Image (cartoon, rainbow, N blue to C red; front, side, top):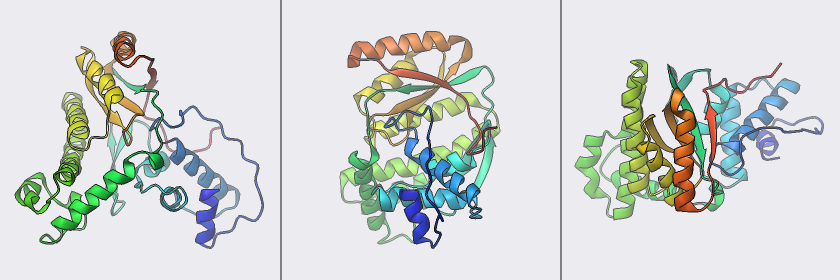
Length: 293
């Protein structure tokens, strides 16, 4: 309904009603973009059926509008963009301000992607996602009193360190430091992926989670338990929270021959500390939104 409402706001009317059956294997409320997936497949469907001549980027933008204006979540466009524009065995290096992007090959070799679900349900609208966004915006506003920047990501880490005294709230300072440092890590990650240096990529994943835990404070005991158990396993190249945090899932790159042992060990550590089971999915980087023959 939200997607169709956003189409109507653009002056695009669907000429008749539809009975749509959705089937998928993305768990709801797990931070794996289940809502964005429904948005993108819905927009792809009506775009195809009624020849609306929308590009996939148009669909991603409308999906974000649905989150922001229909669901009341101040999310960005990354989820919808990745779902719509994804390519098999590639990451997307995306500037979410300009929507300029580069496809970056991911060569996992003898490693697999393992997603671990805390099974602690979360929803963006009732999580602290919007609160974190507001804290970053407050920090940005204070930096803008002396710096000609549009976004936090306009700053390098050195520039941020030089001007961080402009941010008078300690919590907002931590939030902004995460945003700037994560942007730097993303740039580094693109370079190491292009060099097929998966060991360095794994280290960046670990640093990312530590920043999410300590500066952004968007993990929690469940996610930290999963990630720390992953770090302790000899088959792990790197592990971090995935999605907005506050529950949901972690993601790890694990030696293929050790995946079963990894799941057993991490599952046991999680159950012992949290008291209930996590769920594990072995995943691959697939194509974006498309018709299944």
